[in-house]
Length: 443
Ligand code: IFM
Image 1: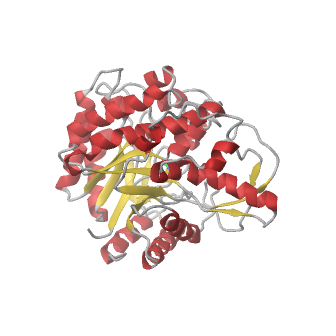
Image 2: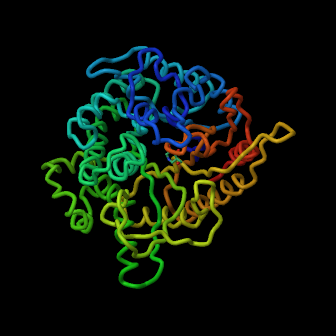
Image 3: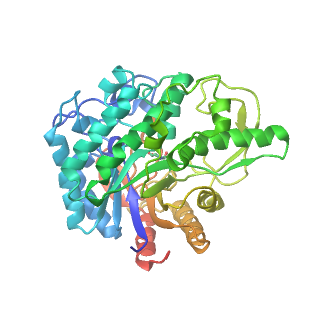
């Protein structure tokens, strides 16, 4: 199979139509409608109106020449109430998948990109074990509906965010600041992933999970900074990679988190389920971490590393404030290849937010994003040269969308969206990316 080029989006960030065709509320509907939670009071109610414009968006994808499209399925569209399957919700994804296949684009769905049905949060959310089983039921339903035309499945997108931003710092839905429960959420997300693997693997399906990972460097060789880096690496990377790929939680993390959890929620046999063999690992990479020991802060996602501070690496930043460092991606890919059992790797997200505007000429000139993509794709090429089993790259994002707690102010798209009119304008970066795809390569 040749190197796969794609773009990525997620359901709540683009679909809108939150009350249409029997969709139930998700935790992001509740959260975004809670005053003060999202910048400017923005919500995903309309977003990019993709639910109604998906055919136009598939045409955009075809024009880009991508081989695959990574999107997510909204759980509350499919199972809007406990035990109730919504055929109209499934129909939307069938139509989307059919349109993609007709355009020669491989559908690459993710089952969970953060929009938990609100009724499951009301029953306790991810800190509760039952949620993992409900996720497995949902995976089965989706596979029954789409398994004849989808062969690449991603269970979860960035369980780091769902657990730690959702339940420790409260920056994301459901907005709880309960670090002990965040540790439970980590495990139940991973358990849900593992429980879903058998259903999704049926008919030769290939299953993966997408993790947001980063290389972590100590700001100095002092014992305190080295330990800060070890702990951040633990929370960012090893807390997720180790159970999935090695079948165990890192011993140092279990120790570091003992003030929050005794891990008694991890039952006998769970880690065998979590580490069921997968066919691919998705990696989302945006920026590296340079860290030092500091003073403890409250309401942080960095459980066990509450006293770590992030140090300025002196590189240019995107409007998210994230430093641009393609070497970090190379380092990360090499490290995963060296430290973990071999598995096909895909960059399932990589991209940058900048303050793009439509110019007088009607175009969107975004040279900084072109540069970002060029650098990171070069890093991927170098990784492949060094023997990393990297099989694909998905740019985040196909189009500007609802950037969670930042609202619509952060534009990650290679296609510009005017949210007042829903007009899509491919940016210069879209043209550059299309050219890069035509050029091919990467083994
Ligand atoms: O927009 C998000 C996406 O939903 C998950 N990964 C990071 C992106 C940029 O913040």
